[in-house]
Length: 137
Image (cartoon, rainbow, N blue to C red; front, side, top):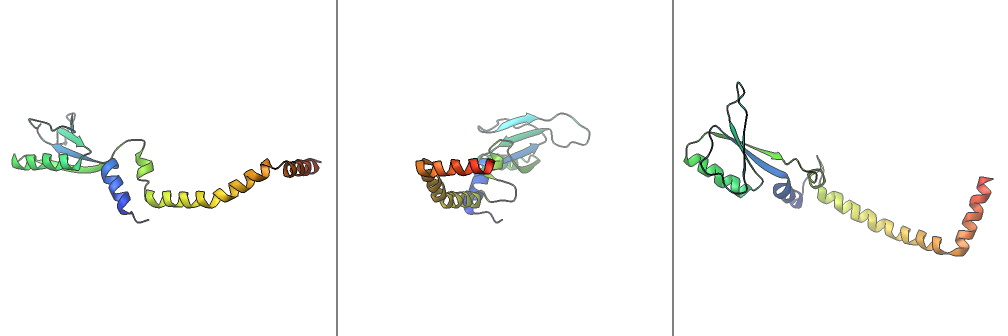
């Protein structure tokens, strides 16, 4: 299903996380950014990873890396949080899911109200319980 503007905004704001891999550490790590030192492995080029959920912080950090002629690589990945599957279900639009739930709830509300009024009616309940006893044998 096609994503709406609201879905894209939700993903950009609450789901996506920017990972910036560098060869050497940066002198000053910006606020709202975590630094993780990667362990030494043969064939691994990058030794440090900087993680942020704020695209503006990531953009300013990348500008700083470019100005310092530092080699880097970027990846945008989904956060590992419990709310990600609710905000951005794989291959589905959260907006259309919520719209369909509200439409279903509004369609079922009159039925629930009608059944509730039947249950509160003593004459109906008497007849219903008598019918249940007849079916039981």
